[in-house]
Amino acid sequence: MHFFDTHIHLTDFKNISTSDLIKKLQSSGIQKCICVSAKSDEWKKISEFAHDYPFEVIPCFGIHPWYVEQEDEQAIKLLEDYIKHFPNALIGECGFDAIKNQNFDRQEQFFNFQIDLAHSYHRPLVLHMVKAQKYIEKYLALLPQKSVFHSYSGSKDLLNKIFKYQFYISVNKRFFLKKESFSILESTPLNHLLIETDAPFQSNISDLFEVVQKIAEIKHKNIEEVSEILYLNAMEFALDE
Ligand SMILES: [Zn+2]
Image 1 (cartoon, rainbow, N blue to C red):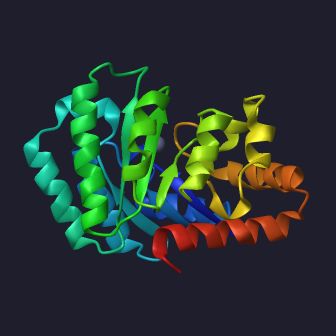
Image 2 (cartoon, protein in one colour):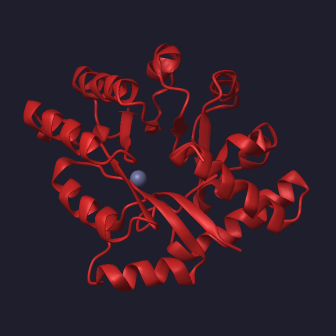
């Protein structure tokens, strides 16, 4: 079985060489991953990962709502340069976080810029949305169709709107601790579902098997079939293949 981890922070693993990290991914069945970023000082390292491991690592450059205060106009210009330089790069993670940051004007400013960039360069968008439902709703009509709500934590009501626009959601091992996880996945079309580790934060590199197993149970399908569908979803989402 092989997996496509659609949300991992490779730059946040400490005390491990790049080649050992890639080996670790492979030994857990992760063939490909989207390496997301949160702030501009990670982009150079991500571009090196993507350059050295073009099959395994799809770069994703962006500015996370937690870090909008420390970024400026120059970071915005630099972001565009990275997007131009990597035709397969995605944009993110970006969005709103109502718990960690109360400065919504600045969050909006950076989010708007990244949405524009996604449209201008036809790139998928990786969204971080925490307790920000009222802000997201006014944005739904503005997002590119290839947008993923990473580590989905919204309501079922929002979920229905998300699928009306044919967006994607992604889930990691932690998602299954929530009691609504079952009903959320029951209402999620399998072809708009992605899986992630968010390692080294929300779960571990070795957790994807368990995630696929849980999805297979809820969807009443066998695990091999589900793992193949999820892999192809990620290919379609990230690489248009
Ligand atoms: Zn993340």
